[in-house]
Length: 161
Image 1 (cartoon, rainbow, N blue to C red):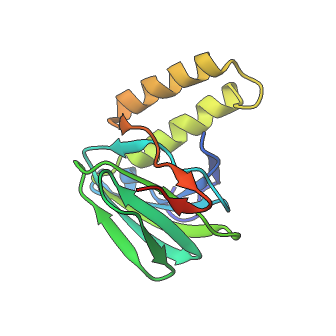
Image 2 (image 1 turned 90 degrees about the vertical axis):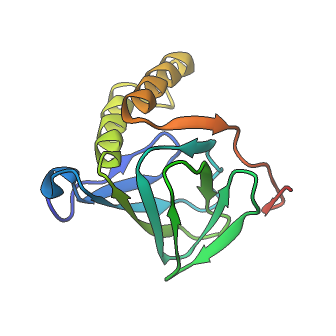
C-alpha cells in the first residue's frame, strides 16, 4: 500500500494516513501524514526507540521535549526527535496543522493501523474507558511507546513553565 492509504483515527483525535509503509522499505523507514486538529490537547510525554522527524507542511505545531521550553514549528520547519528523548506536541492554532512524520526504523505505521482497528471495535465515545485504556496501553507496550510524564500544562494557549 504505497502512496495514499485510507485515513486512520487515533485516540487523541488526530487523523493519520500511511504514505510509505514500513513493508515497502524492509522496515527501514515509514512516512506518515497527520492532521492535528485545532486547539488539540497535548498528549503525555512519550519516548520510543525509533527516530521521528516532524515536518510541518501547513499551519503550526507547538512542540516540547520533557524538562525543556516549548517551541512552535511553522510550515516548512521540522524537528528531529531522538528515540530516547520524551516529547509532546499539540496545535494551539484555530486551523488544523498538516504534518509529515518520518520514522526510522518503521513500526509507528503498524501501531496506527492497530489503534484504528481497536477504535473501530471499541469507539472512544461509547466504550468503557477503562477497557479502552487497558487495550491502548497493551498496544503501546507492544510497539515500544513509553509514557514517561503527564502532558504539559497549557494555560490560555501558553505553555506553563
